[in-house]
Image (cartoon, rainbow, N blue to C red; front, side, top):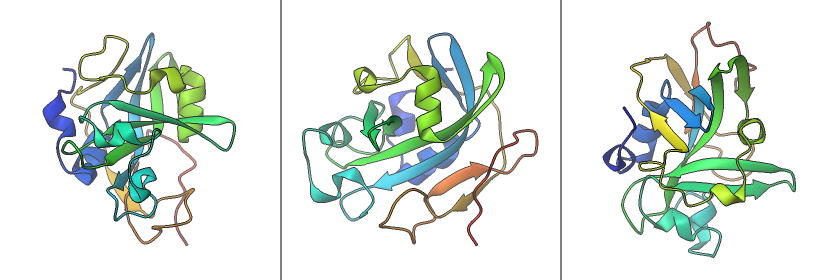
Length: 178
């Protein structure tokens, strides 16, 4: 079943943890979500919306269940899903997936996910609760996960808002904090 808006209206950390094991589908590709990160509100210094609404972050202040895609390091796109209430900027970053169609490909890192799938800025602001092209399904897959500090950021490092699978059948280069 495709996840509806009510799923994404929940607290961002609940959304982030509950997305582990869900199926991300884009065109002919489907993969089980294996890693996510939360970015929550203007009090989170790592959140793009920490300094308020801009042209780039306007989508984060919008309705839950929409894609937020941005470009980083001059080379990578990142896919997020807007969460929580209207006018509260929050999102879950999709950091990793294990493809099941086509099989056997593990995409560890948000840039790798978007590069492989072909997701770019044209995929920003898609309502994934209604889209037939980009959506997330609940397939009843429950995976064990752990929480760690977020990675690839310089602020808000104290937040344990990165969620990554621990199940052995999903091999990955899991970053474990020292």
